[in-house]
Length: 613
Image (cartoon, rainbow, N blue to C red; front, side, top):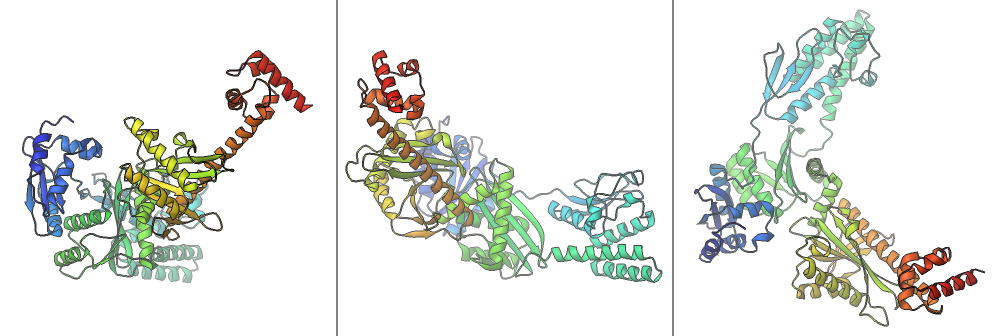
């Protein structure tokens, strides 16, 4: 790292107190570039200036630019959190992830002409259109436009009226009663504009009055025996009622509440806020964040920054997981809102369904910015929470021992990167130190020891054995974990290690630890991922075991041929794989095998064809 101040900064941290507080990083010009809080100032700040090369890219870049730092001691960690948020708001440090409020405005646009359209737009321009708004939320704007076009059966296609009238058959929207289809020529300009004006009144909030008005118009048309027109009023009225019904599909317990979920991706994290007002979903907001090692702390920081930015705090805030300083934060938000605020972490029921919906939206938002599917992101996030990990296990290694008798003990290692198999990183092991009766525990210890010895040889490469896994899974119970974990710890590695045990239907039933079991049944996507990993490592190790067993049987047979020893037998197996392929080979092809001679090839050829006869 090209920061000449590192020795000075590292030495300065030795004088820091161990109390909670905030630290303020500054660059060479004295500008504040980062503000953070700490439970222990000395421990936290000193961590920035040691093992610098192991920092995440963002942290590495920040440390590269630190020239000096200051600190402020507080009475508690929560007080430090409040002070941290205040400093971030005042100074907008370059390396702090701020929740940027969207200051752009959005409008509903009504285009001019005889057949006007209702559209969502970001800009208000002088083009003869009418504009309704402004709205702060793009979600509210687009949702309103979609609903009102469906409710009043207004066209959303690319056709232009009146020039495209009767120039083609009506589209699917007409047949599913979501468009009045002016393209048919059966809708007059007056009737179309009547629906358009009613739609505008509906946007402005006159829902019940509009329904009463349309109902009366339907009765009047029926009395005049204008039954087609009456049917169109009926369809319009039903569409309005359907829109109202669709808004109540989500079951909300409180009249006003926010549902917040934080999903950790492998590169980014995403916080999503679903806002419910009047028992209806009225808005959703996304915030892309840096992955955090402490999700509970990150939730507390997000809640404080978000409501400090927005100002409005509902009486109920539903959150997807543990919140650091929950009691203090609840009091803080209540004081800010001037009313009681409940922070709810649901475990089941309707509120839990809302949390799942929020998490799915956050996962989808991350997936749109990466090459991973929302299901893969959600599975890794769930797995992280199930196992209590500090970060998302992006790089997972799984191991399985397979043996056919004491002579053929092997192990397979499979790798899942970002929730997907990374087949180029799969590895095979032939167990060497276990003799006599098979011992799975001793075999697994040998394999893991060899794996980490290879890490020391290749760690500068950062790939294959040179990459440190985020999680190790063993196909087996708590005995496997108890056998392997002390060995790995004694070698100086703190990689999380868990076992996988199957049920009667050969699906991953539980995750095993040294002390017990963790049920995976309530973590659907994590359950599916674990089952895939366990199935894959079992398949891979069994295939290698069968291949190895076949190789030994073939080797024993070949060694009965004059001139064929262990080396030549092994080379023949590596080249031809099966006896059938070897029998089909010509004399010249047998002779071309490494270490073979003309005489040995002829003896083998005669042996093979004598056997065949």
